[in-house]
Amino acid sequence: MVVSSFAKSGHLQLAQSLFNAMPSKNHLVWNSLIHSYSRHGHPGKALLLFMSMNSDPAQIIYRDAFVLATVLGACAELLALNCGKQVHARVFVDGLGLELDRVLCSSLINLYGKCGDLDGAARVMSSVREVDDFSLSALIFGYANAGRMREARRVFDSKVDPCVVLWNSIISGYVSNGEETEAVNLFLAMLRNGVRGDVSTVANVLSAASGLLVVELVRQMHAYGCKAGATHDVVVASALLDAYSKCQSPCEACKLFSELKAYDTILLNTMITVYSNCGRIEDAKWIFNTMPTKTLISWNSILVGLTQNASPSEALDVFCQMNKLDLKTDKFTFASVISACGSKSSLELGEQVFGKAITIGLDSDEIISTSLVDFYCKCGFVNIGRKVFDGMVKTDEVSWNTMLMGYAANGCGNEALTLFSEMRYCGFRPSAITFTGVLSACDHCGLVDEGRYLFHTMKHNYYIDPGSEHYSCMVDLYARAGCFEEAIDLMEEMPFQADANMWLSVLRGCIAHGNKIIGKTAAEQIIQLDPENAGAYIQLSNILASSGDWEGSALVRELMRDKRVQKIPGCSWADC
Image (cartoon, rainbow, N blue to C red):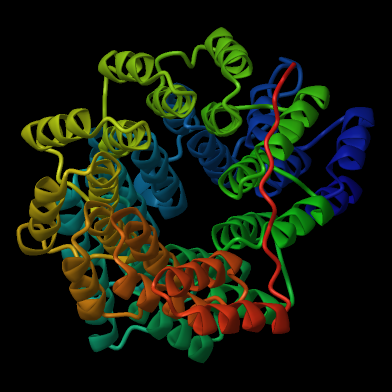
């Protein structure tokens, strides 16, 4: 009983030592230790202990349904189907009929379902008279995991009055298969049937809301979770943070985080991403540095955050630290580090990192290849980036957009337009990011007609509402070409106020084309929106002076001095 007490309380090492010292062990001691290993997250050790259970022919230990069900659960966790089949055979050898033990039946269906042997799960289910909800849930999970949602729905619909576990299983299945709308519809049906959701329900529907990018649904689920008392659960809190972040509502995510009283590693990892996405990289670094336990996801999250917040050198320092600690790395690690090398335009270092990725078999990985395309384009080697892109076994929207942005950043407007046509021909639907890339290419190369056509296509053919980045590209394109009326008209019809950067594009265009009237308006708008912008004061002063308004020019200079706006001196370096 002492061994069992230590095992149940989680002191497994001490329990194992006492177990090893016992001259004679009955089945209760064996069962207790096996079950404790499995319950405390050590399915492999539970399985090894079970395999040694009858290693001594002189002492045969009885294996009851309880221990067999525990071991089947361990096999399911490890996805060890063949081992599970051997245990299944042991059920019959030991004379334990499935029709007499529903727990064994459920464990077997769970095993076959999780391991993808759905025919095996169906055979087990057909051998019993009444299947419990746990077994049905396991079968739904198996079908969903295999992408067979019709069969999963058929199993769910076979239950007259499904419990919340079954509702959660089918909702989760639809979410994992990208059918978020159907998942939300099922949640609403669940509420209409009077079934009260639990923590898993809230987390699943939040995942659906994240996929749909509907922040109002996230807020509604937040309120529902508060009412159900689920928001203090770390799984729900983490799902809420992730949902707010993906729906571009970082302020709400940060507010929620500040109200939480308990954290786990998953939740802290999510917060690193949230802070990174809203530019609060110092907060992200603080969380990372103070985390009691760091997983690979923690390291990858801070790597991505540092890279996307213009801190590639710090990202490389983190990667070096990982190597010194001999930590595990994966494709996401290498993709982030290669991207950091691209931000530093460090060709040699990036190729060294890729060389290390090759040694662990990641040379043909889709994510690594996409990061390489981005890397070579950032280093100015667009042709090499295109060769990597053309050599990819499988491409997705991200890889197409990366190549498109590479062309845009390097002023290859015609190549970007050709690639955009190829992308549509290959069946990929352009996204908002795609149009950012192709409009940016038109902007850099002065392709006014093409940019105007694509902007119209985005709105009226693909029903994508333009964001600030799309409007900025078009305003800059028009201003560079001297089409100031179109630029001003576009800014006036935007659903939000033009920012200082847009007016700065207009001002630059006015200076290039000598349009003093609109240039004066643009400079005044910049000063109003960004009072610390020294360049706007100077340009406004110059425009007034060149128009003969010396008094106005002097007043602008005086205003600049009164507000203590400092002109940042220019400088240059030359290697001698």
